[in-house]
Image 1 (cartoon, rainbow, N blue to C red):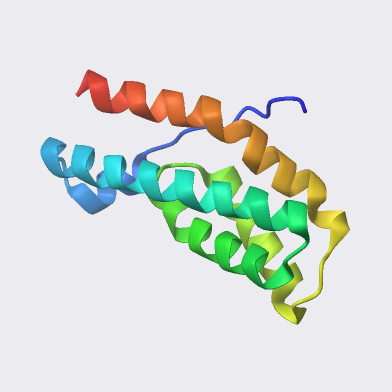
Image 2 (cartoon, rainbow, N blue to C red):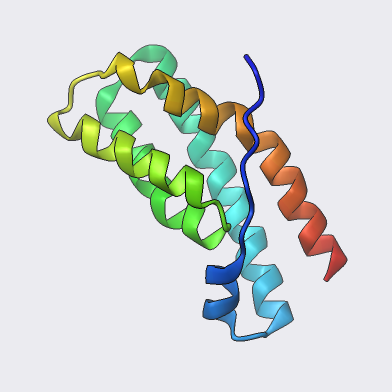
Length: 118
């Protein structure tokens, strides 16, 4: 699987934290852990074709992706969430799921670097 490059833009995070660096670090650290869990769940449910769990994971990732500064992932998750609203498996969404799953490790590393730099 090719790795997808996920762009990081923390504008939304900064608007929430208002320049409070310790709050930014705390929020981003928790968000990274939550995204990690939800992407693992998305991967697992995609592999088993569990449409209900796919939708739950994608739905949770919408807001988490916004906080983590990943607008592409937020859009992809919205698309998956909407497609799976009928609780049926939609294989045409596989490229989006693959982009989220393959792009996360590099995005996670970048976010962890940003936390360490503060």
